[in-house]
Image 1 (cartoon, one colour):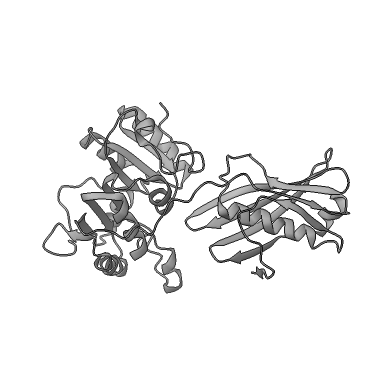
Image 2: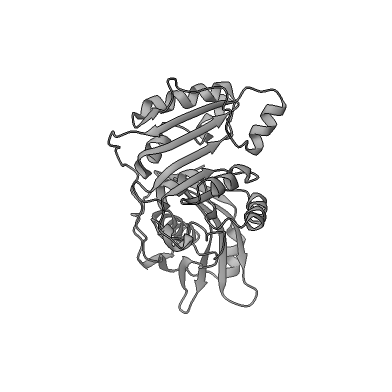
Length: 337
């Protein structure tokens, strides 16, 4: 069985983790495992648990695979995904028995605070996916971030400290993570949160989105693919919950096909996809999602297809949409950013 689990777009929403681990067990999850020192310790110390490591760094995942295979730790799996997307899309309610976050990026500049992993919203989401009594362990070497984390924990009302205080500045019995070793070597004070999920009912606002049909738009456009290609410039737009960047357009040298490389964001999911416009007879084009990379046809993807089709129609006064199966109601105004 592979140590690395397929991407978020290939997994079930939520995911049946027993299928990937080969057994039924509660999840212990480390968000951002770095060099996997802490993660492999979890695998050794909790053989009865299914241990899942989350990372966005491909080199870190490769190094972790090597360590896990060397130690023959069969209860660990790895997934390339953000912590927010993992909790929201891939986890059933009450499926996690422990969540570990070691030295997350503090994004110290005030203008970057919105990029921090830990905030009240993230903790509210985590509370819905953690069972009663589940552990929440957070470590940081950034003083201001520690105050921020404590403030966020107090806001959620779904967690309580396992200590007689919000945090401590030293833990004697602990496997040091990569960034923890770096902080200690630089004589920085490390701050540790040891909290747990209490019995207060959480408000689950984080519904797993439904998968939509593969989107397509059929339109009439009296232009060749070459003429269309010459009009393209990279552009972005945003609306409500979605944002799309149309990065590049490519024309097939042998077929009547245009392909647009697009980056689609719908909180908390991000997908890099290819949108295809294929010219057919009688000046018809069909605009659809290319299946390369296993994209998920979410509402954000329908949004991206809709406005790519709208851009095509804007190129000629006689262009006209014939039919579409999109679940996004088109709007007359688009906010260019």
